[in-house]
Figure 1 (tube, protein in one colour):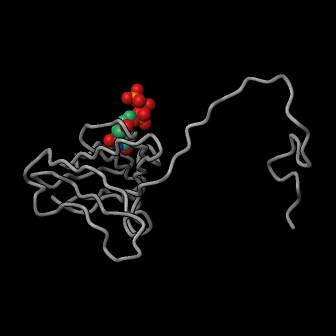
Figure 2 (cartoon, rainbow, N blue to C red):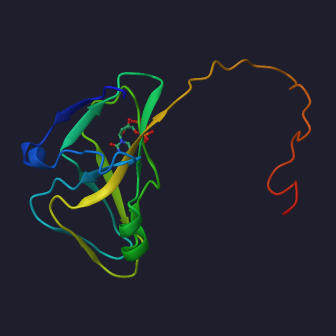
Length: 149
Ligand SMILES: O=c1ccn([C@H]2C[C@H](O)[C@@H](COP(=O)(O)OP(=O)(O)OP(=O)(O)O)O2)c(=O)[nH]1
């Protein structure tokens, strides 16, 4: 288990700190730390505070904010940035960009679970500038170049 520091930014979130729901959970649900319901009009995007901050403190880790399947599939509530990427040196409040891509308004209730966060390993590459790459079987072929089968 990796240790990750968690800080409460808004005391209102005290009783709703993120935890893994099951031993096999990949993500932790993040909740809207809001005092009043927020209604997202069709097509609207709003930045929603979570009331917490994390400090990964390790360049080989990052956190990704992803939509929750239920909200996305049933209600069209996904993320305005599609995926939120949290840097290992970021110490500010985790913010969720919520996008209502549906044609109906949707109301977010205080402390509703609005997104999930996955901690992922990261490799920081040491880029070496070259003129030519060593040849490979694929070469520059992409975007279906190997056929459908
Ligand atoms: O959904 C998100 C995405 C980002 N962040 C925070 C953590 C991240 O480390 C920081 C910067 O994010 P990013 O690098 O994606 O933003 P940027 O638009 O490139 O701005 P910056 O110049 O601050 O890097 O904002 C969030 O709280 N939620």
